[in-house]
Image (tube, rainbow, N blue to C red; front, side):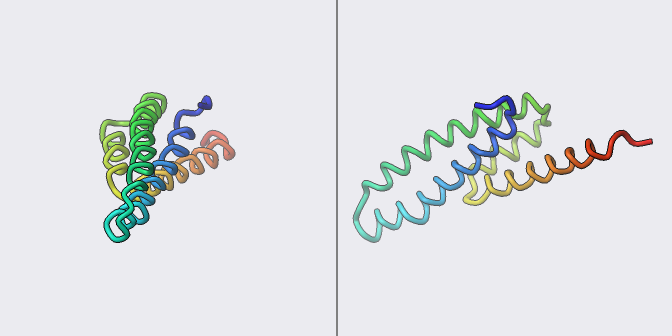
Length: 109
């Protein structure tokens, strides 16, 4: 893990979101349409681990950046939606760019 909990969270969010999409759109159809349940077991296990890591990383990022309860809840609920982690990543990336811009401009006069 890096020294930036929010950046770690963003990477984990991408991995968790991708594993969820693989589970929903590849492993589950293989199980129910092709009769191959092995992929659900494999991808589901990976996704489960990434889901737990996502929760831990969200709590760590929230503590580090002093997120409000609402911000933390939005991040946690996003993990339950198929494209939610990607939306959260995009939002955090925008906030990071805004902070960089504000820092580059210097203090307001």
